[in-house]
Length: 167
Image (cartoon, rainbow, N blue to C red; front, side):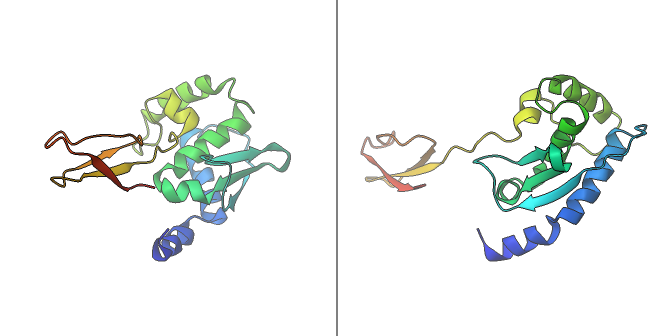
């Protein structure tokens, strides 16, 4: 990752900012809730592969993983709302469809678009990224990208394509 991009990312992706955002989102989606949301947010450098965050119930805490949100910075609000659901609806995902339906209904009256239209996207956030491989034709130079490592030949001149990027 680029050093300058990391500096910018870590200048806003802080526990203080994320806790304020969690409170703001709680007030936005649950304006009539009497019991306050008493959850801390901490930032860890990385989690399990592809994991965006983790709810720690014993500490009333959400752990946000920087490595995931560096790749998907626009998803931090969705991640906070998802994790909030573990504290308000269910520790596991057993009542998450009900929670998602509630958020979708509330989203209709909120101009800030946060909730995806698809339940699966809410439940799992961004799906794990497949690597992209770049091939170049050994004859004419034609280029193609694929998510599979495979033998392929050029559609233009029928010569072998060489793997030139993505490893």
